[in-house]
Image (cartoon, rainbow, N blue to C red; front, side, top):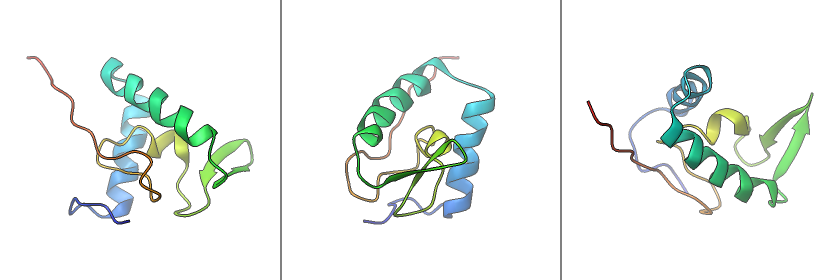
Length: 85
């Protein structure tokens, strides 16, 4: 399955790490839902206490918080959040 956006993979993961450092309540809800799906997946391995996707090699802490990321198995997809200014 490939990402439908044009961002390179490393930028999508950087986006996720940004959301780890500066959490947004809406993104945290999405990340929690994605993490629950990933926790039940047999494609997750643990490396030094960090959950990593076996298919793409991404740390799930960041992948689940990147709105432009999607599961390589199609279990969850890209998201958009509404921001109010």
